[in-house]
Length: 160
Image 1 (cartoon, helix red, strand yellow):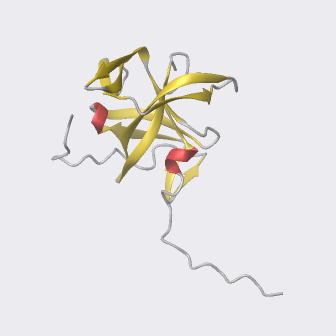
Image 2 (cartoon, helix red, strand yellow):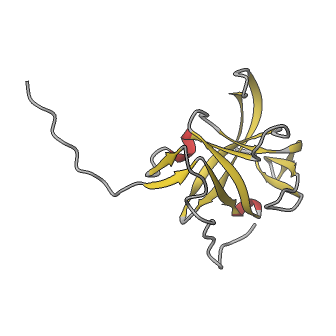
């Protein structure tokens, strides 16, 4: 029996906390507090008054994101990526609208799928699930917070 060949180590992972400040610049959201939840498969964003409508033959979703310490009360309009059953915090599947948007965490940025849910009674406006961070070379330290620093948004970042 041959022994397994050791893998060549990759670059060291960036350590992030169980809660971080992130940006969603395509939604004009420069700062939002997110819980990094490796127990949740899907990411979720607090959204009230969701409305689906047609624009140029494509489905869009309009929703309200109530203001917080980190951002103003705002109405967001974005193309709808999907609608699917996603288990809520009680484990019960519920139909949710899903959008795709750019996420900035510290100096990292990538596109993520985010479900829209009423998180009014939750402690965080956003949950960043394991699918969003898979393959991104980050490790979550469950005992520490805000390790990534403020999201680095380039000054020339294109807005909607």
